[in-house]
Image 1 (cartoon, one colour):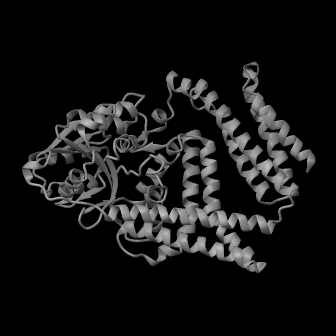
Image 2 (cartoon, rainbow, N blue to C red):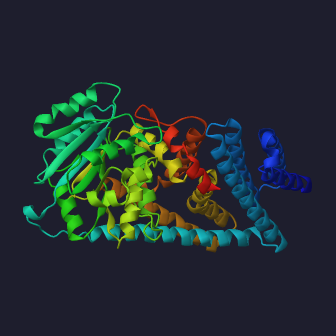
Image 3 (tube, rainbow, N blue to C red):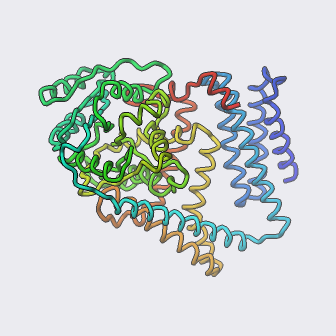
Length: 502
């Protein structure tokens, strides 16, 4: 055991020192040596004494190995790669040091496994109750929606902006529903984002007589994410006072725009984002309880308003045109996978002039996506949302395992040893988690779904797997979105970005 710990410490020092300029030409060789020796030392530690502490060391080591593998692979620009791998390397080594000191302290203080589990169960219960309070606040915030009646002449002009690429029936269904809108001052712009077939422009032109404007999109520059460039082109063509950005999966009811714009004016908001009701083409199945609810959970459960990063979704969001110009337009976030989050944070910082609302029967907005589309969206967005930091992926994965799955271990352990305090705390966590996830699923489909009370552990496993898969695809393979490799703009950095990271 002592030899294994010494090996781990020595190889960590080697990894930390390999970023000195003198080792420049030897870094890849040193990285391979570190991977080998670290694997041997961790294998010995876990094999000799497998417990919570050694398991944590093993998990962090896995991300250290992935971090060094991306350096050896050398997929991205060399200078940028050196900076981010060094940063992640030092942070992960620091995390392992903290875990090691915690293990040493627990051993020195002779803290029993029973006392440790009781403490962890208490922390878990408090964390879960805090998440429950957060979603309660989110739902309560939505119940206080205020709509003042306004005369038609007092309503601002609105432009609905829809980027489209390689579309079929979804685009047609979206426009058909949108054209039933009762909003009096409306223009609809659809941009064909360089579709690989002729079907998309034909669909758009087929609605020309109904007033839909067709825009032929241009190929995006290499430094732009294609969707953001499409948004920028739509922005430049729009004439409305308020811009409504929507995906082709969005379905508007006749009064949706009236209610959304009236809500913005009634509450003096500069921007809103809408969580739609979801319909499924194939009906409810196991996947329907997992994919979209998990996506919404990250917006509803995390206390984002307190973090000054308010919840947001790309399905449908509205913003004043002059504000989006004041915030730097899409040029300010040309490579962001979720540009709407940037604008939401800006608007919220201005006297809380932003809100995230959940569609109900009055809003009348819903979305219809296949499971394949939902999974593709998750893979495209999850890793960029962590700022492309491997250490953040590791911490989120550990946090989810702890918060959502520790209660099962505590319940089994507590029942086995008749530790009723641990059992009680574990039950609080499990019941709270069931109610939280049920509330998310109910808000997703606007109906009570009993199965959602028991399916949340599978949802947690799915989210952890999706996050790590997204990381792997971005770092070692590629992520495609509607026929384009989005890794190139998202993982592309210029000198200014490199200097910021130093």
